[in-house]
Amino acid sequence: MRDPSANWDVPFDAEELPDQGLTARLAHSRAHYAWQALVLAQQQADESPAHAHAYGVALLGCGMPFAAGDALTDLAPRPDGDRPAPSSYGLRVDLATAGVRSGFWDLAMAQLLEVAEELLRKGLDHGRRWGDLADRCRQLHRSLALRDEERTFQRLRIAWFQELADAGEATVEHRLAWARAHLALGELDADGQEYDRAGRLLFALADDPEAAETALELLVGLHLRAGPEHREDRERARGLLHKANPHSRLLREGARNDEGRRWMAGLEAYHATTTLLVLARETGDTEPGLRARRRLALLARAHPDQPRYAVAAALALLAHGEPAAATDALALAQAPLTVEDHRALADAFTKAGRPDLARAHRAPDDRSDPTGTE
Image 1 (spheres, rainbow, N blue to C red):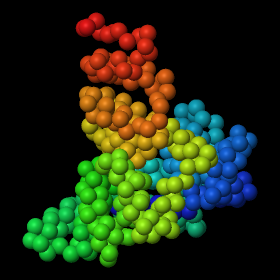
Image 2: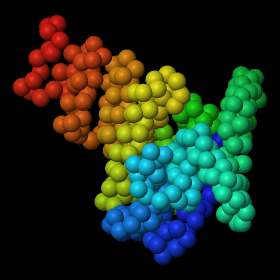
Image 3: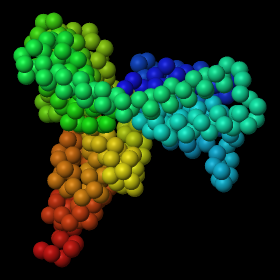
């Protein structure tokens, strides 16, 4: 489903930010100077709560919703008064936007309704900002209500396309739409199997002159979001797209790997894994735990250069009693793990009843079996 926050203004209320939010708005995910603007906002964050708010907005503008959510949550006042920052309607709406873009639509809906109810109690239910807030509430509520319908609709489409294919009547257009239906389900449920089914359909269209460019754009975009089914598929798809359209925006997006971009990716990885791992461990097979575990697995595939995702995915799987799947997740990492990562994995494998797998993560002088079963 389309992100309901895609067209929402960020910040919600620029008047709450220093310089009308100019520094925050300079940080944009597609700007080549995004990381410099983000660093500037970070350096100014300690000057006041408004500057800290601007830093959260800058993170959001750079496509880093988990980091933004943590930064803004640190500012939001608690009912017990533990946080001294003043209540800010714009701050709380921006926090809800970060929630939507992190995938926590239900939580974001509750945050928006809380702001709306407070404005109603204070007689502030008028003006342009009130209208904007009401629009966001309606859009997000509608998206939440349509999720089950969307899932059913896409499954029916997939069944129909399969029937056409079995009868030999599926056209190129049908197959592209078939792949898009699997992509929609993958996005809706963070389902790697659905993404992989889409990937197979799209690869099969790579040689069709009518559909190749569109199929390959979808395929490379899929790999950026959810990773490839097989490691070698990533470069294969990019190579084919380069032949079909060497100026594709997706090729540029996937190729950005300067120091600033790596810093931004690492910062978002830290906040994303922290949040998703807590959810996966605390809520297990209920939502949002199940979705958090699946998202970590997809992020590990999509970002092999950020081993933090693979480690978090493995820890979530181990907490769920899946040591074999955890080992597979760790195999996705293409960069060294830290000493702390190895220590955490050794403990987790041991608790999961696999001291044999734990030994690979222990220091050379500490590889005896801690359970005494050897």
